[in-house]
Amino acid sequence: MREEESSLLIIRMSALGDVAMTIPAIYSLARQYPSYRLKVLTQPFFGRLFVNAPHNVQLILVNKKDYRGLGGIKRLIDKLKGEDIDGVADFHNVIYSWLIDLYFRLRGKPVEVLRKHWINRIPLVRRRYKVRTDHRNYTLRYFDVLRRLGLAVTPSFTSLLDGGEPATLPSCIPPKGKEKWIGIAPFARYYNKTYPLQLMRETIGILAERGDAVIFLFGGGEKERTILNLWGAEHHSTISLPGRLTLEQELTLMSRLDVMISMDSANMHMASLVGTPVISLWGGTSPHCGFMGWGQDRQNAMAAGTGCQPCTIAGSDRCPQHNLACMYAITPDDICRKVERIIG
Image 1 (cartoon, helix red, strand yellow):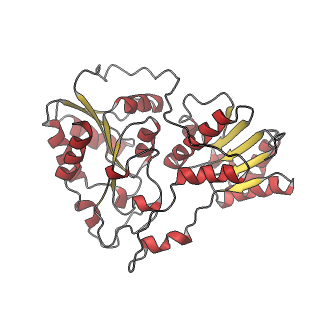
Image 2 (cartoon, helix red, strand yellow; image 1 turned 90 degrees about the vertical axis):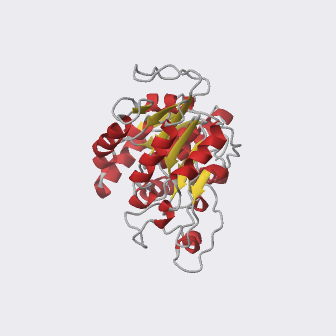
Image 3 (cartoon, helix red, strand yellow; image 1 turned 180 degrees about the vertical axis):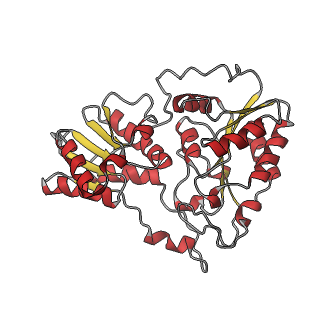
């Protein structure tokens, strides 16, 4: 982009974890190029992640279901026509965003698209002769898109809460004393990314026996709420959170944790965005795929390294081996020892 072009459209419509991974790039760009106006096209729920956004970040919030099909995309492009856009950073790279890209390309606007390199990662997930090499972190790929637009951005993001006011927490969250605060987010969107529930329940029991820790259980849906409320009732030092906090309050609470235990899920990325150490559990996916949380220590990523792992890049509702061996190979004692090394 040329100097006189100062308005950039950034597209990322889903999902929660993927949108979270864009924030370090967007905030770093906004602070290093304060004269640029950054217009982030995303969905309303995901927009709530943009806490303490720099003054030159503007959210264009649309419900994707309201713009379905070619007619819907045309109406969305009509909406964007009035936004005075000088260039496009397509962080999504799907058919939906390609049509938006095409509109601006035909009008001579510079457009750069996220390079996913799916083909290069096929050796990671094939059943035989796997090649387990690390692939570039997705957040760094977003920085690459900006650099191809001529915006040399240095990664400088540390926390969503830097320079802002944290959300006020409800009375169900006790004041923090000398005890350790441990967060646990035991669910993921896909079956083969979720640690077996009976093993996670055992992990919670071991941590609760420490006597010097408060354990917070994070989750979303009704089924998750039922399970977490049951677990929370089993130990006086365990607090179940579903339905009790807003997204902003969850981020504030995560920032005060000593450690978070999470799957390869949105909660891993949310905790990363507030600078909290995350012990991440990997089953069908793998840190090799490039989805580690921003700023996280690779030594805190727990992957058993079974011969079949990884079997998928982003997750699946089935296990090719029908036994989820990659997850069962991580024991509750393994997790608790990792917690002990972090919090002491």
